[in-house]
Length: 303
Image 1: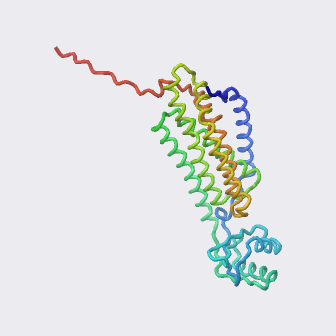
Image 2: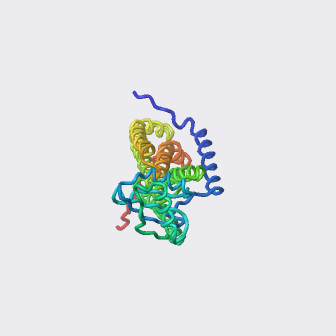
Image 3: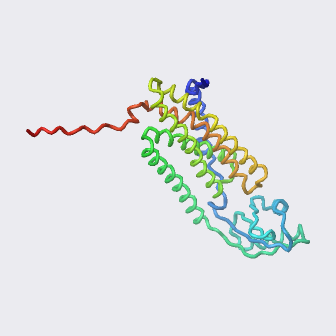
């Protein structure tokens, strides 16, 4: 018989660690705040075109040397097209950037194709819509689990998802990693990943209630988590390896996205064991919660 790992034996210690990290993340979030990128704060978009293919790393170094430390450089269409984003609403900013690049590298001159200012009003709308999107995603998850499983499972999953999002945003806030639309997409992806991991464990817990009739809830959770451990580890490790590749070779444009996903996947793996399951214990999940009530038969009292 396979050895069962006593995951819930250290649930109190795990809860203490979780509470400490969550409070630390919230403290950083409310004191430092998120380092919103130009997608949310507004700034200038400058599209440049080169005569020959441009080296993005070199362009970024040239802009930093010219005093534009906050410039974000991206490839835009062809290899000769470059998109530069930076804070500021100066209408002459585009020509200033082109002149600075030409002074450094006159052999491959850059020409400004367009320069547009994205106001903070647009950024504020994006930020509000992104937050609303996360809330709607959490609400949809809760409704799905309430219908698919039972409301106690839904509460456990939502607490787990909130933990993952808070920890991820806390790390981003603590290290002041730029929060832009790509990072927001990573946070939404974390919700889906963590939910999938939690549902696998919950499904096995529900099945084992029928198989392990004499086992307590804690024994059921330990057995169910052990049975799904190999699947959880295989999924998490393979995902982390792919994210690590993005982190190393994805460049500055994908750095925030990769960090958010990396932290979120680790937090999601942890929370599916020590958050979602512990909530089931707190709510005293039992067999009676999974058995639909039997409708009382009407007694015909007519003579």
